Image (tube, rainbow, N blue to C red; front, side, top):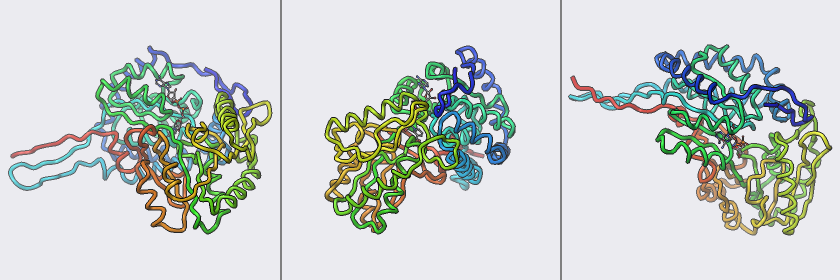
Length: 454
Ligand code: NAD
């Protein structure tokens, strides 16, 4: 398997893909190790994770370079990702013991009752490339702390980072027979679905997530799905600082080269502030520096996957054919690397692909609305349900909209953010189950009820 730098199209490394045989061997190894791991006190497992947390900081320069070289995100954003992953881990480190300790429910009378939280066993963590540290940490950290063995399949587009994660976990004290990575593309991941694993935790597209959920459904084991989004942002007419709001929306669109599950994917603006918002947004977007992701001043690097460039150009063409106006961008950049200009479309509507299907790039449509009701109806007009953002001076006004949104997360005067303390969950085609927060700790254990008499 070739690892390609998306900025230069050069082959950085060739890796050996796993096979059915090597995956079977890894599974057998974990079967032995997991039982020992589960017997350790939770504090001991948290200690290993604390070491891993420290190592991510100690080795951040090398790790950030590896990440940028294989996925193309600007180097500073690779540092930010490492830092963000540590922030999430801190929540787990500080809170896992509390949420995994046994709980006494009845302590008096003839029969005492308690709940004990036991690991699921050996789980698959099938992961995406866009934030390999962040989305990985959501799963393998609480899974390991909970006493599980993990078969970790990094995306084929972030395998070097997957290997770095494995190396550092071992260095931190996680035994090799508790954590094993599986390298390869979808066909390799498929082998995991045939093993008798005790849980399947997937981050990636709706299409693959649905396929995996259907394929493993009859095993009746826990399934967690963190899938895509088409996240809306609404700007009400009472916002005070339109330039600041336009800047925040732009960052929500283009951060990570637009390849975040909770990227702002479509913007609705009240007609009274629409012209000012669009002008400010375009002015700020024009100044964004597209280029070498290793350069300090680069804000937008290449897309991670070659085919994504054409996919976005097709979305733009579809919108233009149906009457949209391209105010900025709309083209590939240069002839080496998978770059695309930050792109702004107006005169858009929901017949256009760009307003309905996940773009996953620095491309957005801005649509004018006459009031909050029209904004709400358009925001809800989607198969996805990950996040929605409302910018308004008034919390009451924003809250009325947020309460009606069928999404796992809502934002008032902010967007495109995730917190370790809050559940991260998608509704509809955006996913199933929650990671992060105490719910994301409990997602990797199962309760056992004790009735104790005598
Ligand atoms: P993808 O679905 O193409 O691949 C995800 C993983 O599944 C990869 O490791 C891939 O090799 C593996 N895979 C593919 N086919 C498989 C099969 N048949 N059996 C087993 N494994 C298989 O997704 P992607 O392109 O890596 O990620 C981008 C998507 O992920 C976007 O839709 C994005 O919104 C979503 N995402 C969601 C979240 C979230 O938290 N909700 C976070 C990050 C990314």
